[in-house]
Length: 347
Image 1 (tube, one colour):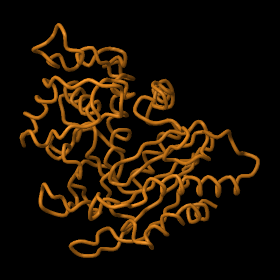
Image 2 (image 1 turned 30 degrees about the horizontal axis):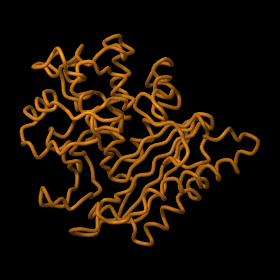
Image 3 (image 1 turned 180 degrees about the horizontal axis):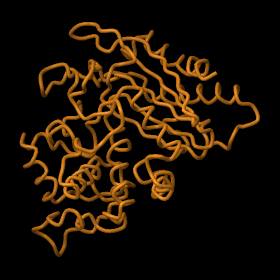
Image 4 (image 1 turned 90 degrees about the vertical axis):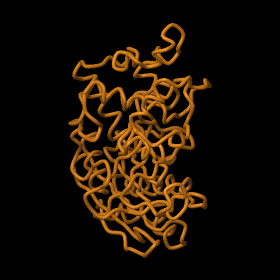
């Protein structure tokens, strides 16, 4: 049954590949009982040479790193009692804005503020333009007087969380034990190409696409994780069965903290990337390179859509913002048709 559902849900992605909007796409779904199905089509690369996409290819997960890696790490540290989500980041980073201890608002930010993107920090900053020494750039992030604004989805929030994890554990994020087929780059297998990067002067393949992540050493808190479709599905399975987090910490990942944001994830809302037919108990996250992961707890179902939509350039209309919900809606329609009488409330 799952194979047929996956085939139906993959149709919008297969059509996008056929139209040439994206070079390649992989869809994987997994149910709460551990069954899974995968479909893929198109090319892992078209430049400098065309390469067929396979199930074994590693994708640059971009901001999906925030939930698979950084959020999970922070919640596990909280579960171990090594941090308190409602305590300030300075518990782990005492030198945050250390030259303005009396006035710096950054020193009052909590772990939860950053997880839920409810800080005043900017969405993004071209940190990579300030130098090429990862240690110096981390110091720059900690000491900069950031411009203040309304709460927005912010890479800076998660860069700070990544630094906090490094301070608490005494090791880089890349040392954290991740699931099978998940790794910070370069990945140990064939990689999907991303952008022909004007800054680095080459087509990126097996190295992190995000410029700031690259400049910060490849494994910061906001990006840098690579994974195969089976690696992402393996993580999703642990989120479905609750084996990766305690019930209390899993509730933090599922419960709204600020608008539609939980601790790290998004909950289903009108117009979101997972489509309008998923249940109200669905969380998800997307990545700039064309990746995404969604988990519908009422249905006991998770899916990941992995594309290389930025290859060879981000400056093209890949249709990803309509493709993601189209795949989600096709998936839920096929799932509900195969499971009549068990249709939950919508998000």
